[in-house]
Amino acid sequence: MSNSFNKIEMVAFETLLEAFNDALVLSRMVSKYTMGMTEAERQSDVIWRPMPYIARSFDGLDQSANFNDKTQLSVPATLGYLKSSPWIMDSLELRDALQENRLGMAAKQKLASDINVSVLNVASQQGTLVVPIATAAGTYADVAVADAVLNEQGIMMDNRYLALSSRSYNGLASNLAERQTMTGKPTAAYERSYVGEVAGFSTYKMDYANRIAVAAGAGDTIDTTAGAGGQYYTPVATSVAATGERSNVDNRYQQITVSDTTSVVAGDCFTIDDVQSVHHITKGATGQLKTFRVVSVDSGTTMTISPPLITGQGGTEAELMYQNCEVVATSAAASINYINVAAADINCFWRADGIELLPARLAVPTDSGAAVMRGTTDQGIELVMQKQFDIDTSKTKFRVDAFWGVVMTQPEMAGIIIWGQT
Image 1 (cartoon, rainbow, N blue to C red):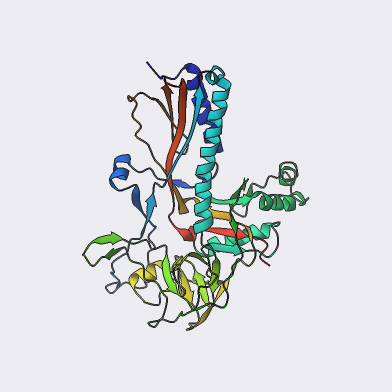
Image 2 (cartoon, one colour):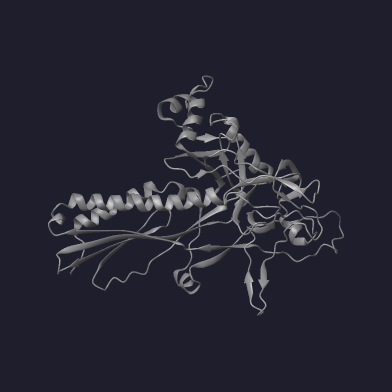
């Protein structure tokens, strides 16, 4: 059969797939959801994934006044990443099968990096639990703060991960190597810069990390009263357009009005005076200021943030179910305090089900003249390798493709640690 793979190519692809599995580090630390490909095509590669319900409870035997409707929240997940690594070899170059294998391994390396970077970008840009540390990375106590933030807000204590930049990771390893009262770990930290489990997190070292810039906004205020000018948010499952069309609502974001957005940029982190985080189940205030991220700056006085200010001030069932913060003292001009006061590496932490990886499939025809091979990694990501020979030029085209999506299903199950915030 024309353009069929020979045995050397078969072995090369199998080796490529095995190494691709090994390179998928971050993608192993998130949840997986596989969308039906026919369903995906008919829905423009978008599916709405449910967020977890949060129930309420009431005292007493008589509950006749407490039978209320429940609001189901969901988020849109998109198959938004389609990456291909192509190359070409002529009939002279194909005499050296080793070169072909090296090109295939290079394609694997780049695609694996693309998948890891997509997970890293979502975690870095959409995680809303912000832990600023004044000093450089170096102690257990720094990571323990992130653990405490998750605990205080009711995030389950298993399947927690922490991805650190190389300098931050090595800073922790340096501190660990100096702990002579421990056995085993200090030696591994000294010899291999190995940290392992710290404060309930499985830690991983990244050879690349996103950066956060210095926040330039200053003197901004927001109205936190319950009146018409208040900024509290009421979750809703769907909205109805003027035409009567009903559509789902993404409740991860809220547009708020502030005094001024000059110099504010997407990614900035901030707190609001007297707005404290609450435990998502008990609704008890933690005594700690709630952290927020700027998603976009929309005008001179409006910006979109995550998570929304679900303070419960409106008193609706949906607000009380999903309340995530409490205004302990209202103000018509509460100060906004920006946290990222120094440029730094972004070190991400999350619980596995806060981020989902959506493996997808390409329907490449196998009877159109090109040879096609498929393989699936441990994470469910399918690789498609194609080869086609051009008789006019005596050249062979190769390509390796991957198709997937990443979604932050719950921004309050993920966050960032930024060191050096003095």
